[in-house]
Image 1: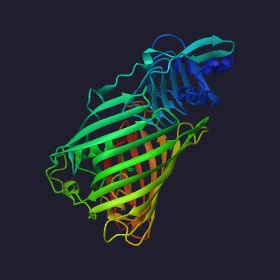
Image 2: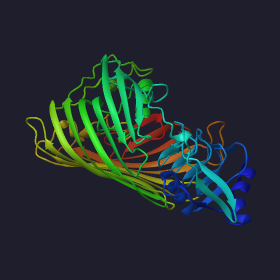
Image 3: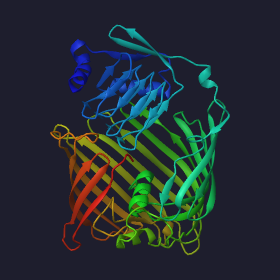
Image 4: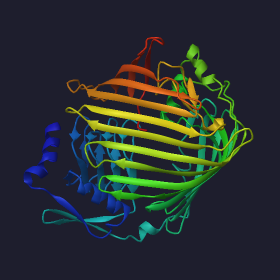
Length: 493
């Protein structure tokens, strides 16, 4: 299989370069994805029948597949674009750029990683025609594609993605999706049952022109909010809470209205999306004192982590303006994602003052030697204001940030975190269903405080990754806090 795959991937270079020209539909978002992929170093795979790219294979450029359902478990150093078929992401897959299906859908997996966006343009059909030196793609308007049901279940038959945490217990959202004006307007209504609170939280998400470069998205409803979701994804945090009683977030309750106008600018390998918006919310505290169950850890002193109280927040209203941007860069060998947001408050609750808060989150990934990679991850918060509402405090400590510290031990209006990881796949070892183990060398520094940063905490460590499982040993550089062993889940964020 590896030899056959190698022949497939080098054949275009041996037989003469093939290329793709996009005719009709070049201005559509799907057409832009194809043009972006063609502008980068890429390989094109065509043919008939199912295409399997196994876990032990590597594609060192962007991958374009025409007319074949693709089952992808390999490492891809660029974007993956499947035209006229479906893309199935399998356990172990690692795509450094975007994963896109045009004229089909992307079936994702929790046991893999996609550095960029996952997009499906199921209604965009492109005719694929051979031409001298490659292929021509032309968009074919479809009457059937425009027959969008006015009302349909959201998610999977009305069931949206559930979550599990130490304050809500099981959050089970049910929703319905209304689509009008040929898909230009979407209203997604939902009710979320929260088992610990016994509450039914209503909510509605409104999207205008969701597939256009300029789009609007807003939410109105009741929610449980956190400032710590940058660390672990909802799926990972739910899994660690349920299986190990380890919730890495603090929470507060919010009656919220949030709306943002986005404008997407795309160039080959680069997407830049600034936004402008506003938020109004009525904040209240939430308790966290028991009756949330977990599989393990209930007799362990660390199980108190699931019962620990949330930090105090002042009850009241906060209204604010929002401005920010997100940048994805997959144009070269270095893949980066940067998010920057600024919140300027207009009104706050009593005994607090207006504030300006800037939040930065960045990821950088670049190859070094063979299949080895160096990763950097950073998160920072800085705030101007005399008495900033505690609902805007951010926290560090515990699994996912500074493991030697207690969970969310440090917090305040100022935060800085920087992690570097050097990943070394052990290619000589191939385990069934798991693939090659990955040894990771890690250095972490960070601090958080009110109005100013305390001295930086620094930790070093080594880890072993086996598919979605990760085992770590971390040591405090100063030696004053000792060391910690840990195990966790590494899923796509």
